[in-house]
Image (cartoon, rainbow, N blue to C red; front, side, top):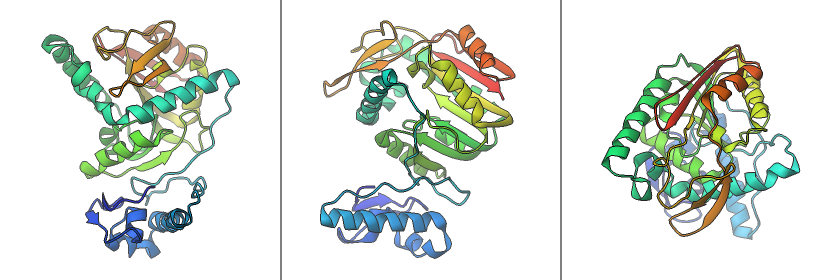
Length: 318
């Protein structure tokens, strides 16, 4: 993590400003009270070890080594990050995935404009009102699912759905892009909620079985030929009887930015506010085909519906 002179403590959320660039608190993003508790808390000890390494590397001009993979523990707080090994990919998939990562890292500061219908995502009062109503419907649908226990959110992005999930159980947020993950951390802190945040590829092989897995607007970034592989991976995450849930996109011309053209052949050209352009995978999977794919991946039940114009809502049982 980079040095910060001012921050909200990763463990307790207390705002803190350090005295100078040598202060360990600024590297650990922990207030002095929580630094003093490190002897009794594994996460706080982990952050302090990393902070010492990062401060030393910055002083010497060397890059700090990545922390080793670490499984989340019940006493961990929101910002614990680690790099996990990704599942093997074929060579043809690596370029689109790299472009997608670069896009979402760059788009992080403006990503929530899409949810909030701000700037180029506003399509006028009628369409925006319909969007708001369906987004609220999707949130109420997700909140009504019988999800509890240990929950994993894959490709969590800026954490729009994370506070809702964190109130249901012990949440682990995973995303391979660091910029949106930092915004997710800030969102959870603002809500006074805790979760385990880790830098981890959505395609990484599960390291345990959990009670529920959620993916928001991720399946539409998977081509149809790779979709069965991901759904099987999602099932491997789950204990018997566990729930896989997702919210994703339906094709609608008023869904995306006015500055971007509709996807063609499963590829979308996306332009950011600063003018940069990216080509990413964007596939609007048919709800009926998603239900068939879920059952083909080994889920015992699968229910896929829509909110009307904008969203597809899916749940399946392992």
